[in-house]
Amino acid sequence: MSWLFTGEVEHRDSAGHHALVRPGELNLMTGGRGVSHSEVSTPGTEVLHGVQLWVALPEGSRDTPAGFDHYVPPGVAGPGWTAAVFLGTACGDTSPVETATPLLGAEIRLDPGTPLDLDVDPSFEHGVLVDTGSVVVDGQPVKPAEMAYSSPATRPSPWRRSSPAGSCCSAGRRSRSRS
Image 1 (tube, one colour):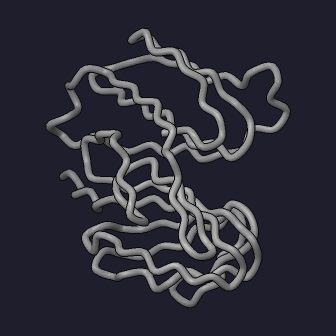
Image 2 (cartoon, helix red, strand yellow):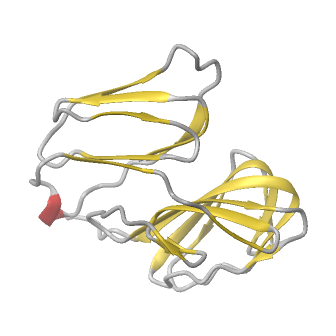
Image 3 (cartoon, rainbow, N blue to C red):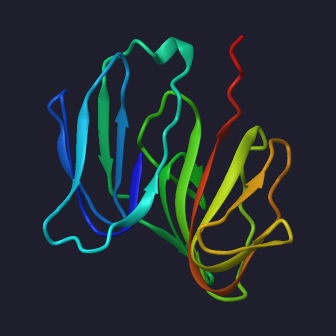
């Protein structure tokens, strides 16, 4: 999964998919039984800044054909906040992108002092990666390039920004370890 804040990347893979990903757009590649790919910054990109997450496929999905989705979420807003939900459901919006396991992915921006209380799945682990500014999650200050974590069955407390900032929230169910 690739989500950019700045820059542009060209994706090509052995299954024949070709797409650009720009800020505010999702590229989700599913490896399935195998795929090779390249992701290259475009000539006009001087700064490439974003998030790339890898999620292990569950046992029953590992031998599926390779897949690729490109999605541009419409964006939603509330008092003092905006969000782009690119996977799962949050902030009253649901992404149409299908995943092999239930996931949540969203870029959320808050104005200073604005609280945001997310209605989240209590079976998920939640990570909040701060990109710019600072945020308080579960009473703990989180700075740029740091990630806040909330374990399953712990509903994260409302987020609060102490400066204008952007964050990427990701969540999913904890995978069972294999013996």
